[in-house]
Length: 140
Image 1 (tube, rainbow, N blue to C red):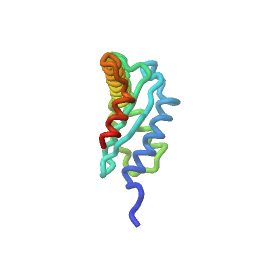
Image 2: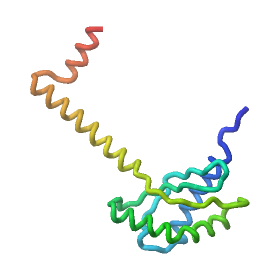
Image 3: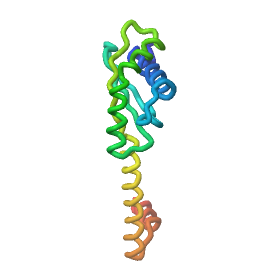
Image 4: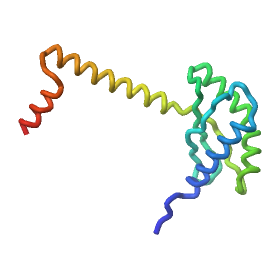
């Protein structure tokens, strides 16, 4: 029976938990207020870890400043990570902004706008979207 998670996946989960705690409790930098570790990807040889982060203030300037702050503290975070984890070699950490939340919100807004536009077009033509759906069922 194959394993459910590979070693890099398990290490990535542990790194995500530990880095989140370290950033919250140990790193004292006002540029890093309310940082969230959303995901971690570890290479198969456990040499590198991409740490994906999000920030409460997601304006471009704030994100840039926060990523610079993370890069300044990366060696300290890695040192504390080495103390917290039982690994022969702690992966080199690389911080990346996770824009998937922002992209998801944008896609939701686009879908909502498309539905609203469809309703307006249907009302302008004197039909409703429900009538159109019923006609499609009858035509089957």
